[in-house]
Length: 465
Ligand code: F0G
Image (cartoon, rainbow, N blue to C red):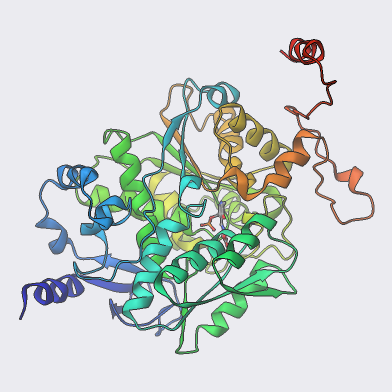
């Protein structure tokens, strides 16, 4: 057997797909084309064997050494960590140079949330402007390995834009299902540009997700939503990159927005794998923030606290969906998240929280992130809003080392930012009396009409200093 083929066969044998439901736990081969457990319908995850990980020595040094390399895999912030990915050395990697995103200090946000310091990991600085790219590089690589012709997803906009781009790179047809009129113009424009087949569905995201699960039965179709464990594999590398940026000093708390719950699941998996490998000595607390009007998992979590349930196996098997989710953070306007079990498990294991924030809180936190010169899309700002609440409630200490994960770029939703600063942001847009639902932002910064003279400009500056 050639050396490469031997290495490939070895890596394949080292990883399996496993049903996460304790009552089932079925195991499948790593290249078996599955979306969910074929025995019980439960969610799958990739499991790397501990034997396969044991023979890697000094991973931290190996990963760091790749930073100066010209190999496209080393230039990717995902494939740079490929020892922990379920692919062989010869895998036909589909990459746009994703990952390698900045970790910023945010002093104004720190003050706003009542903390001494706060850092923001900006996943919106990925090639298509959202964190989805770190998962699409691995999902589309797996699609190519499986010989898929069409890749598909349901989306509130970012998954669609990301899949469309990676499918275009791989030369695959891309079908996306989006809720008509409920995704931002920028996200839709990206998907059009990346030549996806866009199906606008009369319904919400949860309807699109239901349809995608029906389409999954078609053998030509490869589904790239985060229910797909290969998406999670790519997205978990954010935990590795973050820890590397922290000099391997584990933050006290990492806070993420929650929509379909893939991101939180992935971060939880990433941190756990680092612990299993002995690369970190403890887990950071992982907390999830949902928008008040789209918060089924936060509701379940609050009920668990009331009933004293301590772990995921003690909670009900079903999540009560929010039938008509509402939020201006359209990215997370989701009432029935598919990855809630994995996310809940990660939060419970790390002793984090799942909370909600209001539309006003999201909007003001977003403006505060902007004041730090960073900016993000509304869904990302749930984190800073949530940290303020968690600190006020005593779940985060003032001197704790906290990281918020920003998930999307500000230019994903410029209308939201413009409307906020002009005092026009309203949850009732499209309704008869939008003014009744208007959000009175605390940090508005509207443009001002100024006469075309030096004097008028200087006066305007003085007035608004
Ligand atoms: N932030 C942004 C900007 C998102 O686009 C999403 C999800 C989330 C947060 C929530 O992450 O779903 O992993 O819990 N967007 C998906 C989409 C649903 O279709 O683009 P999650």
